[in-house]
Each structure stands twice: as structure tokens, then as C-alpha cells.
Length: 260
Image (cartoon, rainbow, N blue to C red):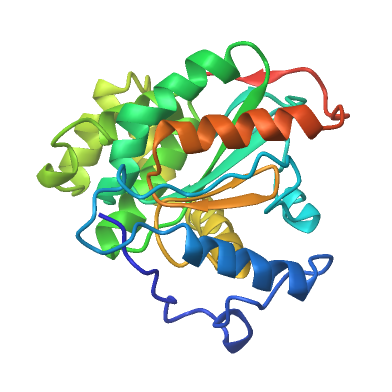
């Protein structure tokens, strides 16, 4: 299930407000983004993520904020991304491995988007760790990053989001088992990387970006600057991706994809 994201105790006062934005992002655009996130959340805490439809206008520019497009990193070496760095559309996903709605998206919707849009070069998916369910959320976020350092992030992602996986918890032994299932070759390095300051910093960077954008629940998405919140129906994402592809300008990033 989704959950409002509490601010971590270590977050500074300037980051405690959703509109506290890094340089270059207009406050007005982010305020509009917060409104859009709120408007597209599932209708009630008990509602299924698949039953609440976020309206996507036929106008490719409706609901799109140019300043938010800049949050796409388009880094060809990003191990937590999937698809061509110069794909015309970038879907950024802010998610928590303990989030039920995130798991629903990962199992039911994301594979279709990958097959339909990533494989033909239209879409790039960039993952952002946005842990909001406490210590285990933080631990599995760092573990996913560590798996990525050995080229197995998406395999770890699949294992961690498998049906019933989150109910088993994400303690140290369980994380090691998931890494093994994901085919991480060096489990000793995986354990070391998971506890490293580099892992903590990578997760913190993703999390702070989500807060800066005003994300308050998981999963939250940006599709070329269009905010979408919740595990919306497949059609919401296909419409947003196709509208974005229609209006996208060619990207200048190198033509190299981060693979699964």
C-alpha cells in the first residue's frame, strides 16, 4: 500500500517543505507538480491502486512542467536505469520495496511498458530509491543499489517485488537470499557495498530529490515532466508515454542503454 512519506530526522529545515527546490527549478512549477501528485493519488487509502484513474489529456503538453523534465539524469552508466540514455521519453519512478502499490506496478504494469516501449527505444526507466517505511526500507534500498554495482539491480528488483516477498521482511539474511536469487556474483562485496557510505549517499540523494519535487507517497512518477502518483492502470502510463513521445525533441545523450 502507499504511504505518505515522513521527513527523515536528519533532513534540514530547508528540506522539510516540498517546495524547497534545488537551483534551476521554478517554485511555481513545483507547486503545480504537488497539485498534480495530489490529484492523481488513489481515491482512498483502502482503494486498489488499479481502480483510481489519473486523467491524461489528449494535449501532449497538458499537465507537463518543463522544469521537472530536468530531473531525468540520462546517465548512460546509471546501473539503476533501463533503456537508451537518449530515449525520447524518460519515466522516473520514486518507490519503496516495502510498498504494496509499488509491487503491483512492478509485477503488473512495468513489464508491459518494458516490452512495449523500452525494447523499441521509446522509453527509459530511471529508478529512484524513496524509502519511507523505516529501517527495513532503508536497508533494502541500499541493497538494491549494491546489487546494481554488480549489474544485477533489475534482477534484485524483480526478486524483491515478487508476490509475497515483502511479507518475508528485509532483514540481513533475507537480503542476502534475494541477492543470491538475483544472481549477484560476489555476495561478500554485496554485503560490504550495502553497508557502505556510498550506498547511504546514493539512497539519500534519490530520497531528497523526491522530497524536493513534493512527492508524498509511493509510487510516484514523472513522465517527461508529467507527474503521476500511485499504481495507476496501464492505460494511464501508455497514454502519458505516447503523448510524451509525440512531443519530445531528440535527446543529445549517447546511445547506450543500461541493461537489465
